[in-house]
Amino acid sequence: MRVAKLEKSTLVQKGIRENMQLYRMQGDVLQLHRYKLTYTENEISFASGKKPVEKAVQKHEYLISDEHRDEFIQLLENRGISEYEIESLEQYQLDNEWLNGKTFEDITQVAVAFEMGEAAFLLHLQENDTELQTALYLTELDFRLILLEWGFAV
Image 1 (tube, rainbow, N blue to C red):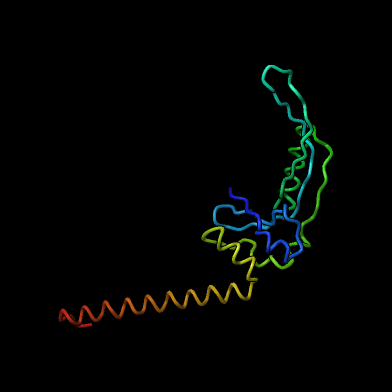
Image 2: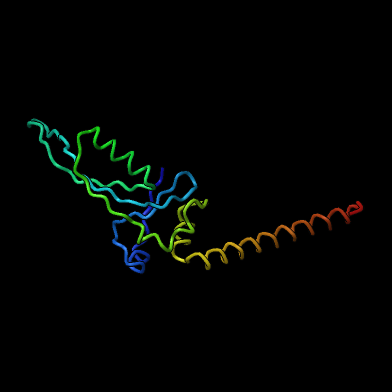
């Protein structure tokens, strides 16, 4: 699974904190994050020749739905972690709902979609589709001309 961050320019424009992840890619499908869950977990590190050292480390998990949130909370509780903070990301996603569940060819196309907004991005796709249709039409015409030159009825 790929997890992507927005470029700094987009984050600043949208007034979003730089370290916030707004979405993840599940294959080629974009999934908007709905919650940020912050918790502290103790980790043990072993320095060479020294005793093990236990250190509290703050971690963040981004969750895509209420069910995902509930499952992760259950996982934390099963690991003995009962203190955590949940932040709703809904206010940051208001302009992004149109992206949820959409399929993208690559992460660059996702960044372009976030930058452009819905109307501009859909127009961009339509223009690209028109260019593709024109190219296919011209290819078909070339093929027909070749057939005519060879004496085939078209």
